[in-house]
Amino acid sequence: MSHSTIDTTAKMADEVQIRDLRMTESTIDRMEQLADRIERLADMLEEDYVVPALPYELPTGFLLSIVIPCYNEEATLRAILARVDALPVNKQIIVVDDCSQDASRAILQSLEETTHLQVIYKSRNEGKGAALRSGFAAATGDVIMIQDADLEYDPRDLLTLLKPIIDQQADVVYGSRFSGEEQQDPSWLHRFGNALLTWASNLFTGLQLTDMETCYKAFRRDALRGIDIKQNRFGFEPEITAKLARRKARFAELPIHYDGRGYEEGKKIGVKDAINAFYCIARYGIAD
Image 1 (cartoon, rainbow, N blue to C red):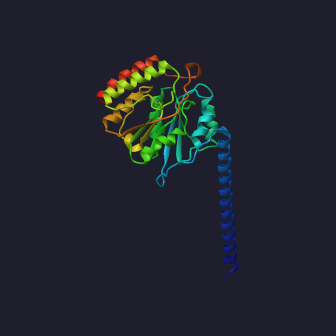
Image 2: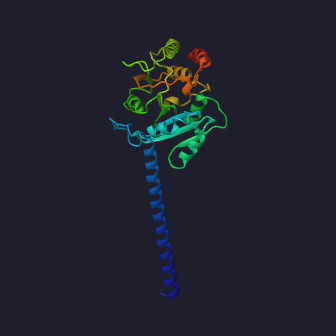
Image 3: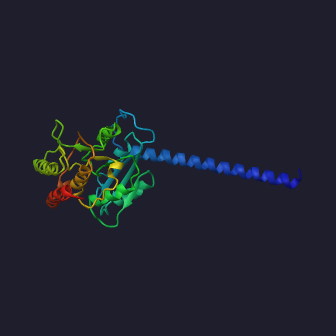
């Protein structure tokens, strides 16, 4: 073997070793970044917020998509994301920032650098329905769930709502604030309004829900296929309910925990939204 051949072979070996070393260093860097990411998410979780182990098995390769519409929720955003991330399930977390005017967008931008959040930034404020429309389009999970960015709803309840779909007993599961033994909403006005809207919705859909306006809705992704969400604001709730009912989706409803907040704390739904909800109940109860 000539000296040139030996030199070439040695050079190639050195290059392979360098490449392998770089790959090893790159792998270590990724592992360190992952550990750092988990530590930061864990640091955001309150010490007294304990998430139980999943009490049932999930199918192999199962993915849960959790869509979180967000508008001006700087006070609660970190806490709710930490709670959602702590759920013991393989998940895709999609936050849709509806052109927030407070520090929400800056918080999301900083978290994007250290977590696996998928954030959609809207250029103008359109409303919850429009945000969910964007989030659903990006969702790739077997099941899609909705989570508000405030702390009114407890993400641990999502595990309960998921089970009827996993057991193939339902295509859609709603979390009810009014079907359990304990009174979840202290405002009689909110309870009355929700009861009236739910009654009207049931009249058109033939369902027997107790809380049509609930945030917590879980869907098999296939159940949402072909549904065009037209309502940009809170009209989404009666619209999606009517359209799924017309498609003969199997509904289930389970009690959830609820810690309602007042308008001074950032609650956004108003009288105009209630009036529009009645319109949407009739409108989508008849046809798409």
